[in-house]
View (cartoon, rainbow, N blue to C red):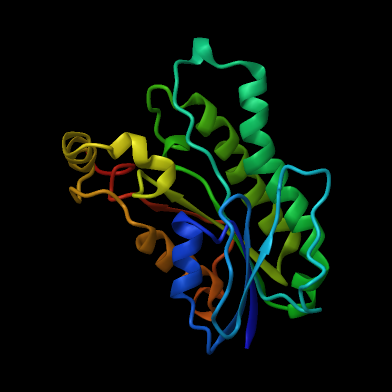
Length: 231
């Protein structure tokens, strides 16, 4: 049985991943921040965590960890002229510094597995320029750099990969698809003519955690309905 830590497992993609992983094959440890969760399943534990705090602790984890998924993120869209340095720093603290603190804290347990897997999240907006996406693209661009650098440093014992979604039907994106018209307009921008679902992202993430992806590391997977590569 593999031990998997999912940071940000109480909503959106993280919650879907918690539900999708086979609890017969995995012991899942998931964290929540403001959305308090209570586990009533075998082989699933929920624990509180604030990734913006001075330090993070995972004293409930076993000595060996096979997988880590870091899900916390933000979608703050506004013109560049209205973004303050503090705005950039707040996003960077959640999406990059938080990931770094978590990885550093559980690295010894991941190394003990001999074949660990880390999955991070970026966005299609890093590789494609979109209006008003400066804030999110800047911090997620750092995540892609972190992914590639750590994949080199941690090989061969730990694989590090990244999923880069396009617009996904989660709470973070709710205001962007709040009406039927907005939902259709956003769906039609994608060659596959629909908005992504948390399950789309969870399926890719579960694959990257699995032994089926044992020869894959340092990659950015665009799960985006074709928007990044098809006109």
